[in-house]
Length: 456
Image (cartoon, rainbow, N blue to C red):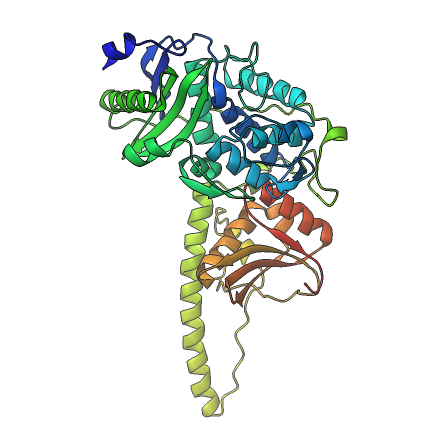
């Protein structure tokens, strides 16, 4: 198959690279550093920069963008956006990642940096920080433009960063269909996703100058392989070659390898935002510079620690409820016998109690009975994290979120309400400033939330 591929007539020069995604080790390379037209593989960087802006709090998934004439006039593939239309960032992200919509990509660039030219500068700064040494971006969509070039190696590097730097968004690339605000759209990579075992992304690309390009990732057991092809003669031929390369990668990759994630770049000093031309709805409250301070080392538990705390608290809650039920039964018996019964008191700050269990004990501490926090405080500002199928799921989310955002939610009370659509998870008893800031920070992490005023 390789020799047949080599003897074919191409729409563009052929290049390929295969790596072990866990370690970055190269398993196969051909013309991997040749500068070629990336076509819509460009949108991987458009999305990466957008995710970075959300992480910094410069915008949120719910930020509404006013579509410019330039964005609306982009050539297909497109979502069909109209000039003056307003649409949320989340739908532009879906359209760019799944349908590869050029109008959505341009709108994202304008929302993040004010203009496509400014966004291209940010893309290039990010490419440099990621080590993509042979890449130059001129636009956000990838349509052919003089000097807009990349390589198989650089695009593979970018694909690996998308997987490990923003896992909360990576599932977008495996969706075969999704709703993009104005209509349902289908994935341009759905044939490979359907036909290759373990395939879960990432991005296709095609122009006449580029040929048929694809960066693909697949996971089987403990192994993950990324294969990139530039210059395919058709989508079918490209998919067949990528499948061969992925097979080669799984054969050559070790069954076990220590995961070595790439380092996410920090471009705080290089980022240039032009807010005077950002087209967003006037009601948007997201700040253009990140309101999120660096977490203090002594108050930033790791993900593993958070999960351990949640499990510990679940066990403690179950035990405490059992003890409360037992003591209540005993109290009833004593009361019937004429004894004076002292009611059981419940601690009010479960978050602090949970945090205390993670610190080394310097002296013996009295035994704690941990129960769910008080749900009072409806007269103040609150945050809703959405509805969930069970109370336990909602309570676990509230606890984990409180531990992640201690600086803004430490004094908040957690409240779970049984709604017709499920159990709603809420933080209540917040000031307006704290509620707004906490929701912005949660949105930057990719969590949905809604700020509600007094009485809401």
